[in-house]
Length: 475
Image 1: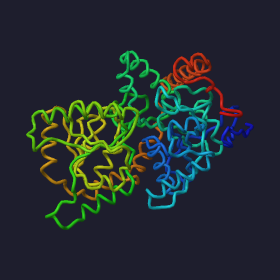
Image 2: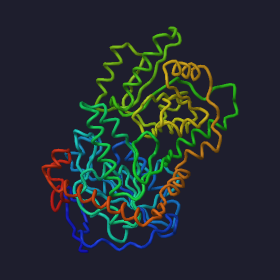
Image 3: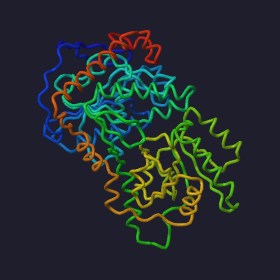
Image 4: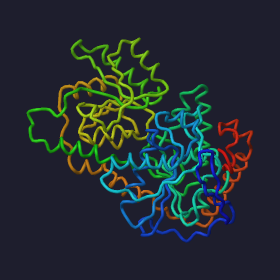
């Protein structure tokens, strides 16, 4: 296979391995074997502070830190016009500048020297989706010698518009990790039921075509073929450190918390803000004046102004502070975190709050099943149960987090869960079943590849004009 080097408008060297004969893969072995190479591909990158930027980055760092493996993080590179939309306060002229930014951010959040590579593929920001989609065939940006294990963070998102080699043809083993409940977002749009049904089918098809194994972070998402449900995310050592200090505190007469409750998250209605306003309004309807629930809210986003106006119109005691780092001192003194969102798959902020020894109040929902096993988590399914949870966290103190529970929240433990969950499944025992599976996957792949070859189809379904081929000059 020949390789070519192209350059983008921002001077980004893009080495592309052109499609040819698919590499001959050996029989699958354990992912824990020495010498394996993991390519972690995601749909976002710092300085965009979103889950699909932060969690894959930390996964790469901790996977590489185990030793005896190679790890590459493959993230999208945006043209300056798209950077202005996504992260206007931190602009980069070259990928090297962004890479330095990513490594600097990571250095302050892990207690070791990261040893993995960071590479880029071309992306574009789709305003209608509020997310980044790939331009061209991302598999072309992975050299053959690194095409061992692919970890597709949001495999459906990465392959909705994919045209080219199947990821399962390029790599020996492909694991997809489902981060986002896209069906919930589709359901909230106009003609939501129709969009949800269509998207459910597309997601299932592309994930089956391009992945050998799917890891669902929780049961909040749709069913996928060859899937397992495991939370393979952790939290940064900073949050664990805060929790340990609180657990080791010896002065039981004084509280470690000086403030009440808060919520932190991207300010878009679908990220739990509709539910937040509803729960606070319901609780305060019947609460005594001295017991009214007031919260500090941190975050920014497209619906920031609308959410503030709605809260003011209902005269809710919510104070909006704008964007904040959850690891910053500003959130340290709060005693409880309320997260009423029903659109999360697994909320990183909930895990971080628990790690810091706080109470967490969240909905009794599949996305919170992992968190509900912790002593300081309170769940509800009715307004009466929510009120009961709030009264408890207002009037009692969280229990010190046992070391075993803190360990479950670490990225070290999450990495071990990931390696266990990502192991290849045994193929069907019957030959007829194996043949049927391969033929159905091949047929679905062929149909999808044919559809995504059409510029008209790509534009119709939101892929964008000019995104079919990898850039040979300017993006």
